[in-house]
Amino acid sequence: MIAEEKTMSVPQAASLCGVTRTTVNHWIKTKKLHADRSGRNYSVPVKDLFLFLKSTERTIPFELESDHWVPVFKTYRRCWDYWKGTGHGDGCNDCVVLKNQLKVCFTAKNSIRVHCSTSCNECSYYQDICLPRIQFIHQFELPAAVCQGLFFWGVNRKWSKICQMPLKHFPGTGIERIIDQDSLEAVISLIKKLRVEEHVQPINRVYFKKGIKDKLEVILSFFPLNEPRGTFLMLAEPQGLITKYEQFKLGQNTAKEV
Image (cartoon, rainbow, N blue to C red; front, side):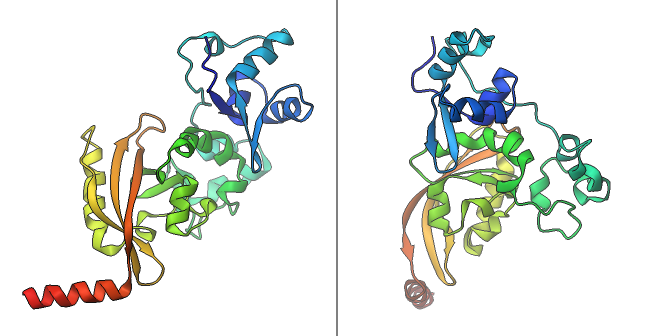
């Protein structure tokens, strides 16, 4: 039977039931379906969704009756295919994303040749197709992020907090914006290993940028993910802030030893 702790987002519930997000939001707003609200988003308990569908004599998806329920996502599509036939998609042929057949559109967000000027937090493509696939990171107690190659898909609030960057700015941001130059080479080398290895050892001393000169030392762990395909999870365990003065003293001590 369904685990009582299981929840899903509105897009996941809509995809599972074969309806639109607007329909699910209507069920919630009219109090027909219970959902917990966090900020502007809702989480729908699977048990409540199951009971709602049963009480209204709607078709109950097999996944809701299974003892091994897993999240169900919409089929991953490229952005230009998602927008096909809409006014938003009229400029896709002139966009660098389509011309270069980029799988993840927001990795090109800083290019002047990108047709779409909408931020990811306001984009229905990102909200429907990409965001549901990484929502699990908000369950972690540690700062967590999902990346593909050298770009972020998204992070949880704790990662956002230690990096002092809003959540909405992370999709498509390069890791060099967060990782200090002293650690960047080691992190990039490990990311390359993830393409051929299932497990890699954590990096014990990675430095995140903290302000203009300060650094935050963390232990950084990496885990390849099956979904989204080709991505990996990063978990950070903060160890302590290293100020500009401490870096200066460390440099002096190193020079004396030499």
